[in-house]
Picture 1: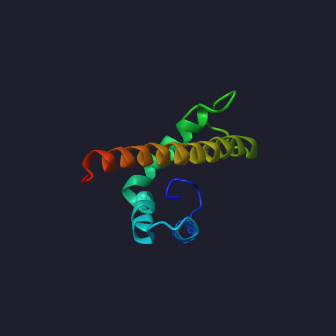
Picture 2 (picture 1 turned 135 degrees about the vertical axis):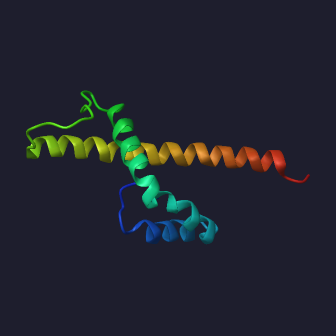
Length: 108
């Protein structure tokens, strides 16, 4: 939830999903705080670049002299696609890593 573009509603959505899936709400809130101010540039850049992997014609990173509604739409679409893809990928990787660490360090 911290990477997906639900600005302002990340905590509420995180609590709702944690309640629905019967997860630990405190841990869910802590993990959802990946979008703290020092991390925002990395999350935005990673989402935009990751979104380019799913586009037929990725939008290059950089500035142009002309800003039109079409360029804003293309950049926004690539970012939105990338943010959801990055969120799913990051949650899968962290979930697998957590599962493996719990299996490795759990008392038998």
